[in-house]
Amino acid sequence: MLIGEYRHTIDPKKRIAVPATFRRAVGRKVVITRGLDTCLFVYPVKQWEKMMEKLSRLSMGQADTRGFNRFMLAGAVESAVDSIGRILIPDFLKEFAGLKTKVVVAGVSDRIEIWDEERWREHVAKIEKQADVLAEKLGEIGVF
Amino acid sequence: MLIGEYRHTIDPKKRIAVPATFRRAVGRKVVITRGLDTCLFVYPVKQWEKMMEKLSRLSMGQADTRGFNRFMLAGAVESAVDSIGRILIPDFLKEFAGLKTKVVVAGVSDRIEIWDEERWREHVAKIEKQADVLAEKLGEIGVF
DNA sequence: ATGGTAGTGGGTTGAAGTGGGGAATTATTT
DNA sequence: AAATAATTCCCCACTTCAACCCACTACCAT
Image 1: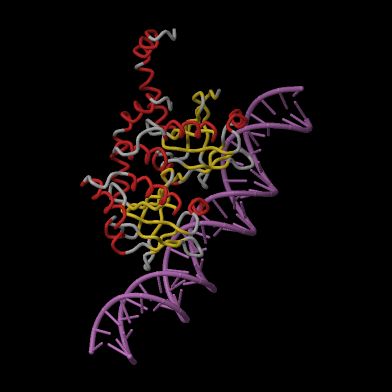
Image 2: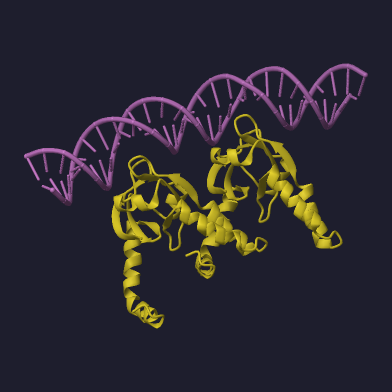
């Protein structure tokens, strides 16, 4: 289970260090793809394959499914984690997520998300405002 | 059952002592997360895993669920209790809860809450004012 | 009073994050 | 097709930070 939030930097060669806590869980190969809400998703290959299997079962006839497939697949890149645990971010993904130098690397259960720090702060702020609504939901499912 | 309120301090290295009374109950590993009302929640790992199981049953597609997951998961950190019973608070959580030096560590049934002392006083004051209203509600559901 | 326990503070070591050089591979250009 | 440019991968070096250990003080209990 990947959890936690880490502030890292993209170095001049467009590399990002995977937090040491995540390395064992993700292995040496990952798939980086366009994520939802303007961030990048990073999946361990195994997880990725599972998702692809699910996707392939969806009917191909529907236009929105095709679009989603393009979004996920065309934007996906397989990437190796280097010897000291960094991954290389391709230009088009870096641009897509609006990554500058400071980024946030976040663990969200089975994937890692990479956010531009600024966007992340905005996103979190927005969610915090809805905290009481969230609390209600949590209550409903019996978390609190 | 965790009860009681303790005034502790965050040392220069961002560590907080877990009250001795709580230590046996929480074990050596805990999960620290963003809490509601601008405080931090600290769960024993077992408790946390139970909650995660419940969470994982929620549907994934909707935007509010995604945000909600980010709030809960990315905001969480697994942390080991050190040999003399202290936990390390990550920067982003310290900031989130507005923790200065003086904090309040409170036992709330199955979790520990960490508050900035100032905020705690304000919060308690607010609740005291509403006490009679709350009492009425509690009476309705048959607590008193 | 004295031993024990709890809370606070600090030093040291080892790991993790950052940055950069250079080789190898791929792409581009003439 | 050859030469040059660019990119990516593999090292290595520096710096910062966190985990571990130990020390001091205050308080409680016997």
